Length: 349
Image (cartoon, rainbow, N blue to C red; front, side, top):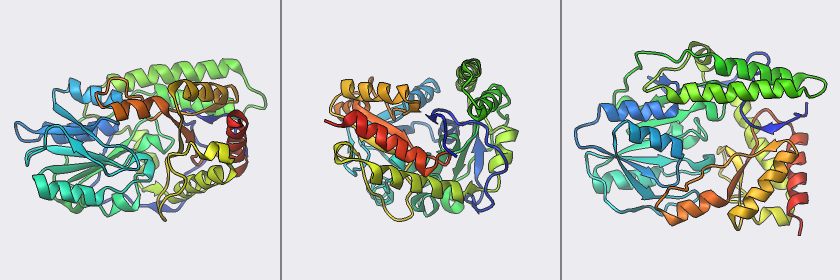
């Protein structure tokens, strides 16, 4: 069934998740937010340890780690690249964060090289594809993923130590605010209604904003809520990941050459699953104009990520020009073709 809106926060799904699951790594620990996993690691790190984070990364998450008092160092790393540059080389007491950007990366060899050359520990962020081949075969000291980036959850993240080489502490309290549950339920009602009801949309948007404030305000580490854990405790729904991959392919195949020239990537390795189809425009002005026209058509593309405060010019420039097209399991082939056709129309020259 086609969706009235494409993108935005998940609504509460009807029915149970698919039967087939990709099981979680052994000894996984569940948190409310992805940042909590790293906070937990750094709180038990040796004195003098530093956390190295790419300049191209979520600013809100970095700000939260900064408020936690960690010694943060930034370094150069971009999607679709293995070019890594440090102003200050890590040591054997430091932790370096590597990211599977958009689910199409594999920096396992880069992590091995860093560990061999500097003695540092590697933390991998697999939020954009929590059960990728890289994630499930990782040799890093720690892996984590924010599950609410790809699954219909109010909260939820997972962390594990591949091979059980390190210890992860279970949070002593769990997330309990239900504002986002109400937002997801009302959005589901809005999408299911025969005709759009502006009051319902205003209602779920207000609850989303309020709920996100509550979630962000929690000082971590915080454990996953009981209702989110009940939905994902058996593993990651395989069919939903397959649907995302299929939708990504449909969008790319339906694009005109005029749109395809803006793709950050148009193919990916077998068994990889893109978070989104990513476009990079020639300027922030063009990006914002395209985004506004998509929103007018009820297509809501997020920006991963704005890096306005970054000292790295490449990260700042990419963050001002990038746009992510949603392709997750909520959508049908018809929805994805609709998105491509709208992009074709907007970008026809």
